[in-house]
Image: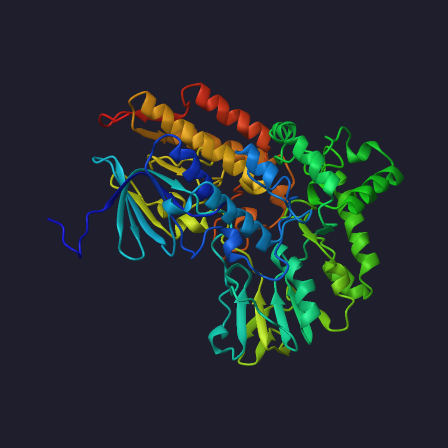
Length: 547
């Protein structure tokens, strides 16, 4: 008989890892099948990336009316977004509203990190362990841990000796940080750095930005939400959502390009780029011509236009050239959106340091030292150094089976999946927007809904056919990984050392992880796989399933 120290494990139909946008929708969707589900979330609140990333200026780079759930028509109509692009507090408020509106919290366990998950082939179930020692058993696991949920703090020598305070964009204090009157260093100029630097510059006595790699950034042109735009968009929601499914980025409202950038002369091309620049937004700019992500000569025209905008904005010529990216085609790394990012470098209290030519050697008690010996006195350091993207969250969990290897071994040479949704050798474990799927290259909520719906339909299919196990074949996984890489190699994406390839993590295999064939093509492929009886998967019956 179990005692207090060895309680009976909780028994679930589906265990969900993560209480963000994906985990919450998974609860809602799987409940409809009559399944007993529960999500486990490491944070003290729901929201995932929008719970953790509270740094100054944190904002979505997809327009609010698009970056929202589509599964409930009344929710779409009722919620009012105050701005064109949602801020972190507003998006978190929305997520909490959804959790309350659909009574999702009762199936979320907060402050609980999953440490291990083991599949027992004979029992045909997963045993999952939490950091508190709790054991849970479940027929299925849904990994909704997120693509950008494992913050990377660089292992700089001397960090523990720093007498000031340091912060990471993905682990920001919930009470906020006041940089007024301080000498602040920001390390990193990716998306989070680009968003926070203008805000911190307004507070700090002096801000020093340490840049290893310049990134392209476009103006967001954020504004309060125009009432007429909101009314019109909401009236057209069904058509817009359907149209989004037929686009590569799962975002509607942009005319599909019909010509190559090389089909028009420079004057017409620049006029087109200027219109996109004034409109704001990244999708619009990349949609100017058909071949900006596949033809280097075409991309060069778009890249140089933005470089010239940087040169025209930043007054100091040396600083402008450092900020103008020259080592990757525009769009092949995460394309940032900003408000007054480049203008910030014209402030007298802001300076830019190139740490590609003179690398950071160590953190000192009083600041930071470069390889050349140059030293910077700092009161606070901010790491805008990103995440162990796409694989980090799963690799932090000890995932293994009684019949095979651990996931970390399976992924030793880079992530292997079939459709980005399942992994050969790991039955009944689904991944939401995993490597091999287009998630991070799309409007994420659309990809989340598509994945969760596919997963729910697969589980329902199993139950309706008196089956209880599904896993991809090694052949299907291998062929999908090959396809993902072949598609990537047909584009310009591999020319950039980006987190799409794990380039920001020392020692991580350089494998292009997202599927860049487009959301539209991917969804059609997933639908076809299901229509063919889950082609590429082995479906089997282990025991009689209660329907």
